[in-house]
Image 1 (tube, rainbow, N blue to C red):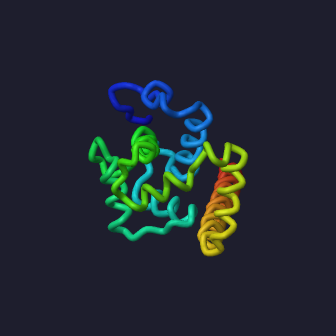
Image 2: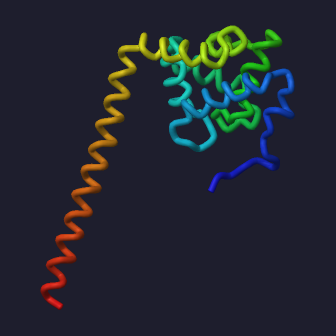
Image 3: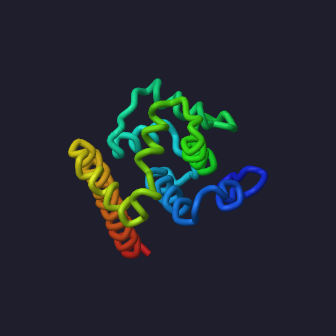
Length: 166
């Protein structure tokens, strides 16, 4: 099960400056790139996100981005810390160029949710190299399915043979 901090994060209460539409968009972006589904963006997930959004970063820059909003010093970005990026951007408080680029890229006010969706789809299509990465993941998933099916078949065959000896 997930380990939560003392209290559950409520973006509507903690970040009243954002509209419900903005909060939903930021949450969707966070979930989209949280490939481990653990409630945090680690260095690799942040790297992938920045590449997909057209703003690739160096390893050092990614670490600086995390450090700037990492309140609990766990070296990853929680959903609350993800919201801090946009909150600090609105106040002009971001030091990291990468975080500023990220905040500008996810602009719900300018694009609207539908526009933001189209914008991200266009950004993804621009990233031809990222397609290769996605294809590799799909192949790995297909291979795992195939291996699982083969294992199930071997197990069924074994059970059928075992019945002959009963």
